[in-house]
Image (spheres, rainbow, N blue to C red):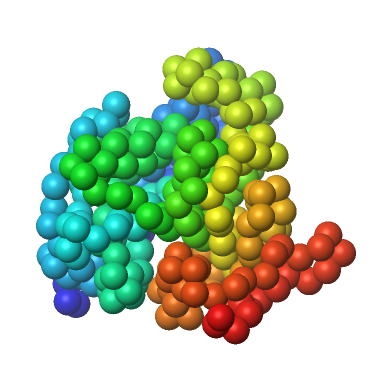
Length: 316
């Protein structure tokens, strides 16, 4: 256990050092060679870190059945838990994450009668591809759902975290499925995030814009398609947005804005959990399961001049 922790910490340190070097290099290149800077920005923006699984994540995966799903971006590593004749709740992680990050949801969902499927998105964990994007995430969900349904399994719910939550929203907007969805710490704008990315790396706007045009051209989707309100205006699925007030990566205001734009969405605010601990909080997991099973009534998002709600109504 101790050696595994050292290995994970060492990986994180190497990634941080590499990131700092890339920041400096990209800032200088943007000033001296803009075309090279665009290529470098594309690589950095579209390449997620592959952070090693923790011992607890590996322990969870060892209790499931691993299988492979073919996707447009390569093979995806997936795991199923529970009886195959039960309805499925699909879990999808965020940028730089792994399917096993949502491990706390698995036993609770199994206990209430679901089968659980989680998977590593393209470019993450044990799945193929070096690069990734929101389009990759969207295609990953489509591939896994299609594979499940081809094998006679019904998807009844989804839980998405961060970029995975955004992909769940886009997928539901595109097909108008009415399964129940929980969106944890969702972002709402690729373009706005790219602006944050550019500021962090000292990239001037012309280089950022050229990077955006490259992704739109090669992936065949306009970033404008991913902006509120259009990105979820046609969604018909009941949705619960859960977001922490102290999230430093994706502000809670983004989750509130998404819940307001989503037809009939509910909102649950938390405190002191940040962007990742929220996935391991027992109360958050219970709230998510209660929403998927439709056992609890949750509040709508706060009014524009009100405070975020932070508690569900009593059980029916």
